[in-house]
Image (cartoon, rainbow over all chains, first blue to last red):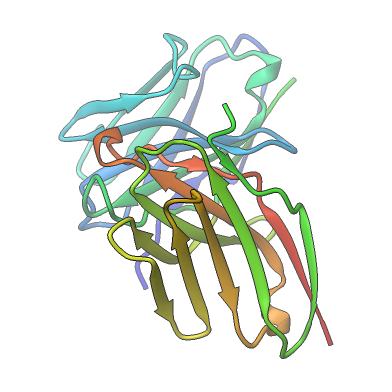
Length: 114
Length: 113
């Protein structure tokens, strides 16, 4: 069964550094998402992406964050000037359509900011 | 922003019995609902969905019920199996939100022999 893959599984970064989290969505999916889950808290929506544009973003997704689909298969989340509170699990997801469709999640990247 | 609530953080059920998980929402614009299962160190796995035009959807051992007037949905797992032990999340979205799902806090289910 096709799946969403995320790399790396664990990323440790010094505060203030930039980090790029990578995702390969399911190949025939057109809509891509990033969510995060801070330890002990809910899964939170960050951003949705379609046709090389951001469709929707949450209040969390400020200028520190950016997303890109640099080629036909990868979908990346860049976090600039990382802060301690950026430590979380970051999940990538994809879906065939943008609404009324289940999103399929990767296993996440654990980001630890020191 | 507590638009989706799962008020039971945990549930213990005997193998073979029914598991009932509950979820409440406050946003009347939500029209599509999902249940996910999550094992440790893995991402959420899609289980079952329901749109607001239905009040029930069934897939094997899993049935989701939607009560729009009460803004309440539930997931029934019958019969419960040891492999069902996991955290279960409900999630909701509206058609105009471009796939932005709001998640509940999750319910940890433990199925005992």
